[in-house]
Length: 324
Image (cartoon, rainbow, N blue to C red; front, side, top):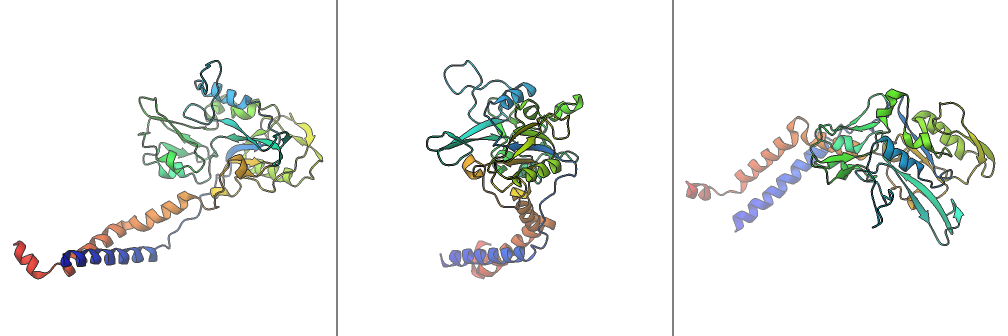
């Protein structure tokens, strides 16, 4: 019993030594990956959203997605959240009497939920077979069902809860927004932005969208400005409206290393269901740990060496002789 206890203590001591040696090599920590210069994305302005859900319907049509039903009456599409068959949805915040638009007290507000197309996406980092990829030019996070093995690591890795598994699929597929990339060849763009009547969802280069977002939050609340619709670099289809009391923050500018989908709101983003995330992406952190531990087989070699030393040190000579 004493020999076994000594052996286990030796293993713990050796493991601590390995961990210390590993931490000492943590000089290869990588920074967040940056989005491509021509990255495409969306700007969603919650203060302009009227909750019509035209974007939800357009997304279904553009991606040939079946309806989902949340009640016994199967009369129309009524999804309650994103899923393997619903890539985009509008959710509602309500507090108290819920009568004041874009107010936290006795107010209500809308929030669009879909893929954020992260600059440094954890779903891409976690996928072992490169079924999730980030386009080098547009930065759009795409999914290849032919490569997917159904492990669902992407589902676990995403802090926004976006990739969803189609459990009724015989081949095991993931469903998520790909910014309607398949429509680009026809000169079309994201269907959700294309049909939005108020310009609450705007399509374009993320750099242009970020500049527009910052322009808006710098305006005096109650003043009048023009809001473009459709795509930010398209034909002028803007309209004139009053400026809301914006939160002085562009969600997605820095969160999680930045995202190509940006959001504005007059209500606190966390109350609208958006997670409060650090500026460092989890992909940068996890890959740093992985590369530190396994780069050049450092960790396995150190671990094996530590176990060998512990075995030699804490196994008595008479035990070795008795085993012969």
